[in-house]
Image 1 (spheres, rainbow, N blue to C red):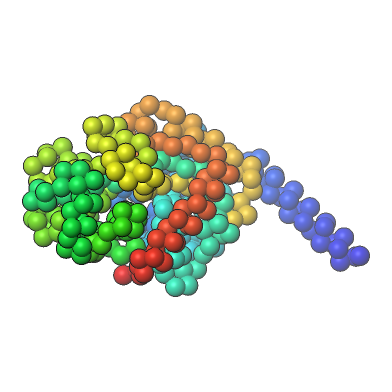
Image 2 (cartoon, helix red, strand yellow; image 1 turned 90 degrees about the vertical axis):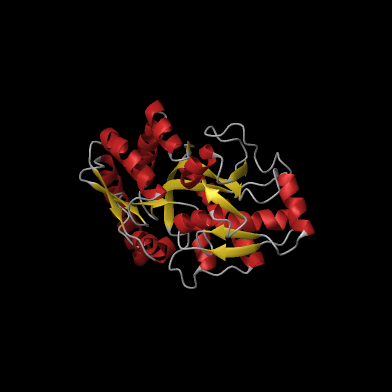
Length: 322
């Protein structure tokens, strides 16, 4: 009984301390870790929201890039950080994907993190080389069925979001297409333009210039459930012949598990206020992303759905990390 009471007292003291810290939060600068090198879409989106959230919170938010191992090194480090709200992570769909790709990844996306909020979603765009006779998703599927295993598709690497988007497409369409992984979107798109591969599910931000040019590649559809404001004339894959298809990249913010709920809610309120601003929506749109604010619980549910969905695609396609 004494032990039980002592434990209860200790828990109450810790709870009281956490609540006191939350009441003063934030009292010093916050670090927002981007698990990739500077300059990519994750980094740009992190800096867009960090700049404006700083003003709402009254403290600087320092963006820190820690690349390596497909984002797993930084993600693992944040999972083990002290849960006081001063170390946060920009999370993409890879948060839910990587545990199925890498052995001993070192974190559980649901157990080891407190979801703060979703920032935005970004569709991919289905591109084909002009030599490919398909001019729609339906005709692309028919072509692949007529020539099983003959069409090659580029990606930014094994297990990348664009790779898995293509694997989901192939599985739902019942077709066989061959994967050609590259080290990044630059070389993949270069070979697509050169006709060395037939098609690619590219991130929107990487493909905007090519799609607008219209002469080097042909855009067939976007992979979200709704059309992209950047290219409203492009249908979704779902409406163009593959009902139910959706493959989008999600950007959000998570904190280490155990971060006091009042701190999580303070961060979420600041994030959602930023995402409501028209100039922020415009800046995200330039990156091919659409603001999509969610509360902590809804974002946690989104992470769980992403893990279930993509782990099944990884298993069926026998995908392994590079």
